[in-house]
Image (cartoon, one colour):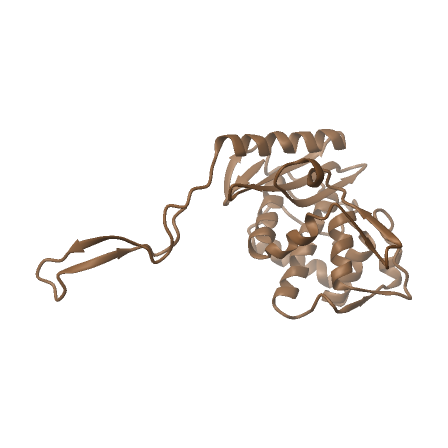
Length: 270
C-alpha cells in the first residue's frame, strides 16, 4: 500500500489484520516524539534500564541494569537497530510501566482512526492478539513524519555508534543506503510475522509511504517497497497552487461600502 498526503495511491489487502513485528515501534517512537516536542522530556534526560528491559531479547544493544542512556541515544538505538531493550526502557520511563504505556499506544491508535489495530506490547515481539494492518501502519507513519519531522534525523542514519564508539549501529532499513530520497521508517520481522516494512521517501517535495506486510523474505520486502515508491514518484507530483493569504483576484462589489473586495486563499492549495 502507498500513500500521499493521506490519499491511497495503491492498495491490496490493506485492512487485513497481521502481526506487525517491530513496525510496532512506529507508535512507540510517535509517543516519545510527542513527549519531546511537548517539553515533557528532553533528549538529554537519562533513562534507566530495568531488569524487564534488559531481559527482552531479540534485537537489542545489551542494556545493563547498572547503566543509563540519554533519550537521544535510546531513540538512536530504537530507530537504527530496533533495540527492544531500549524500547521497553523508554516505555517504562514515559508510562511508569510497559503495561501503562501500551494503554497509551492503543488510545493514540483510536485517536488516529487505526481501527484494525490492537497493541499488546511496545516492541512487536509476537504475542497473540497483537495485530495491525498496512492501512493503520500508514496512518501512524504519516502522523509521525508530518507532525514530528525531527525523527528523520534518526531514521535516516545509516551507521553510527553509542557508548563512546563501543556499540556499532547499522540501520536495519537497507533503503536508507540505496533508495534515492529515503527518509525511513521502520522494519520488522519475526518467524510468525515474516518481513514487514514501513518505507518513507521524499523527492521534489512529494512524500510517500509504502507499507509491506508478511513478505516471505527480507529482499522481497525491500524490493516490493521500492516498486510501490517508484510507482508513486513516476505517476504523481507535488504542485503548490497557492499559499494561505494569497490574493487570487479583485472582485467588484455593487452597491457596497467598498467598490472592490479581494478574494484570498483561506488555506494552502497544493
